[in-house]
Image (tube, one colour):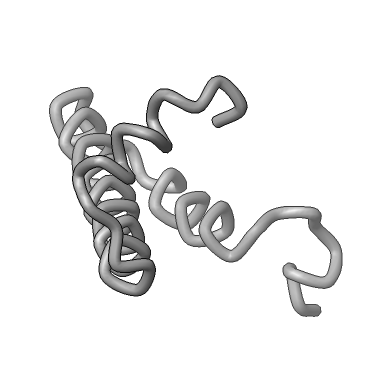
Length: 71
């Protein structure tokens, strides 16, 4: 039976559940959390850099976007 058809878990959650089936030290757990955070931070930076390039934004444009109360 395919577990993904019976659970509301995402593919990421399922992969992490496999990892969590094994006991890890608190130190390892902290390192894993850090790695996950770094991955998503780098991904977000790449997406922002791509948007910057695609939209040909300047520093003034970014200041205007950041100062927009609707953002």
